[in-house]
Length: 299
Length: 299
Image (cartoon, rainbow over all chains, first blue to last red; front, side, top):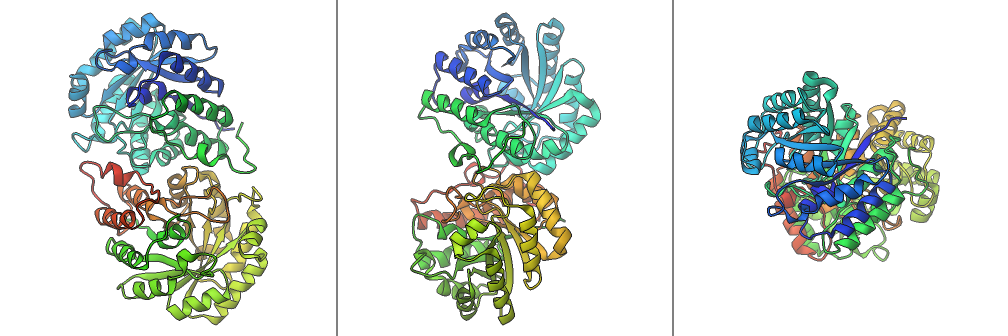
């Protein structure tokens, strides 16, 4: 039975860019429900300056809650050494660092060049204490500079592979297309092999699932997604909407690819989300249409 | 340069299932705008009993308008011989017949078994006077009977291929997944070869583009889609939403696959649609997000 591994990033990428704040208690309940549905890895928050992003101010508490859930890999995002230290103090199992392949985006987002950001992640890796993922963001294009040269993506991915446990490619602003996804994953894998793990897509132009399918066909087995399609990038206009967990899981399960996730329980977790921030727009077709008559999950 | 051919079915599959009626004048303006954007084939209406589906009562007039647009293949749907005769009188270039592979759906929809429906289409083909497409509907599953055996789909497709100019597979209720799409297109092609032409997907569970990608990879080059994702099947609950023309065209063009369609002009045609029936829900990410910075079409 083929399998994929889904990492839910809604509590981080989703809520970080939502218009409405979710209470800490609701975050905890939502994360618990996601884990109960079968998610084995959740990016629960980011250690960014609370003044800059108030929605993430409670990340340490959310991490501590999540650590109590058995079998769950607790992931946090950090943009720099300081954030990494806070993630270690809280006890995160894995820390994701976004490293933008777009110079314009990198300088606007973290006030560092991509090379400086790579060195920042290298310092964290030397410290150790958690798994480290280097996520090459804006890998498929950038709202500021447009085209991002594939050579730059390969170069950054190769630098990160020297010291990261895993490398991911992220379509931060929803520019990717399936042909590009296949080409770029193949190219990066030819340079760094199995260190290339994850795919992070946005649904900005509706291509999220098509890109996930293309990545799957190219051998990718680790996918980020966000319940209700929450999320985006606050520094990249028009980048709203991660690929939708509910539809992604339905796609794979219906293809006979096991996710280990129970769709009915996933819909229950969605209920917690929509009740906690009822005015926030959420997306996803499968929860509205329901499962097909006679549907059987892969597992 | 690889190419695909897109048939816009919004004026038929979309409006037939919309909650709001579009005036005949607006239909004409919309179809003209679609053609101006580069659509070379449009399913402009259906010859069904006007009492049953008032939205299609003006199809003959819409066909006559569309015939004046140079280079446009004018398609109409017909469910039976009577509808076919009306389509011929109006002058449609091509007539599509839906033949449901689901017995339950067929009997509910046209009060005929699939075999009786095949014979009805055969009668029309003998009359001649227009190109005939046999579309195997509910080919990927049915809201009434659930699973539709693939053998039934192959059998019906093979019968239709005896006398139709082209055969299509339609996911009428949005049950298809990419693995199934590849398997079923391959299977049917192995039986009827190049007579298998078109793919008609719905976006009911968000998989429309992923399924279109899968079909493309399996060699399909003819796709139905509906502007704004209008459409569904009134006799199959929960089947709302054809695959969205704007996002489909964006996907192919960004992959370097030419559609011959100008996206900016397509967005103008969308404006006519949304102004004509402003309260009707329309979908599509690309028109809202806009084209990526530095985007270049395939053509």
